Length: 428
Ligand SMILES: [Zn+2]
Image (cartoon, rainbow, N blue to C red; front, side, top):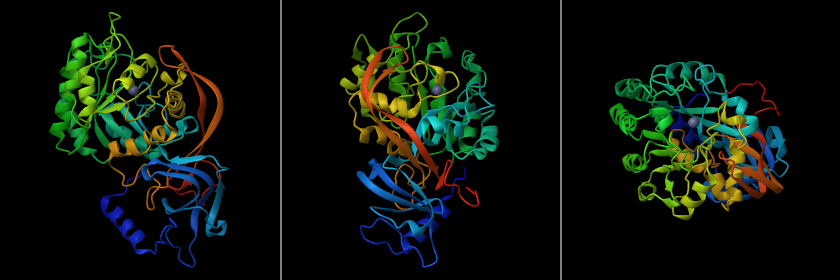
């Protein structure tokens, strides 16, 4: 996926601003000989970034949103697609996925996830380290249509060796090399991933996290973040120590993990039913709480207690990879979103947590995560399926719901996955 540079974006914005905007009509005017590239009709639009909900037609041109209006004439577009009243949101963003096939031990091609995830943007969460991020960038990202970003792993080889833990040997955690990888790829690398559970770092305590933070700082790139994976850590106090080290904007992924440590002890953010004060303090100073459901990292009992005591997640993500995707918790993004609907969160809240909020965390592509005019024409179509449904977390706790979301289509940069085909099939 090509990322327009800032100058190009400003030019584009200026062009949009220069065209005549019909007040309230939500569209940029077309010239007499111009047509939209694609028109999506009969969409039940939900865009939390604008507080927008309702039946709309969405027109796209040159890869961007060109009109959102109650009705757009079909003959104004070269191709027309009928949403059939399905839910249409800004393209779903998965802040924690594993999309380095052929290069990491657990990666899946991002485009193969679309049918199950409805994602238009994914973040590769530490699949690559400083030694192999260049191959991800050169050979994986341009080969697909899904928009991609990454956290580079503090361990040099990322998750290439999975399931062999990458940080048993602390020498793999190299600050200088990682800082360079962040700086050299700052357009698509968001920061540094570190897995801090005991089954990954053994008894290295807080040292891997210390190095991940140091790599962010040494990169010299403003705003780069640590994404810290948690699970069971070696002792109860260590979890509070780690939480205290996170800076505003850093990301706590697997925030509701209930995975025990190697001795079988519960050392998560909720211990004996009580939320750790360090977790609440982290939340209050702006640490991003991310789900990262995965195959072993989402526990209803932790989630319910944490939410009740003040730690609502900020972002919903899948942690989908070749192992987790086969587990009963089925951590595909719309299914994980559905679990939170069943827990009482509104559709608007849940959609914001996979569009507007992760877009803000990414902070690269202007207007990602919204359907405003000039935004990237990334859309997800979802079916809201009414009826009794059962879910399990990654520890086999069961909860029931009344509705779930099913992927129903996807458009990236104004080009649908499947029909109607763009002619020529050129994408940027
Ligand atoms: Zn993961």
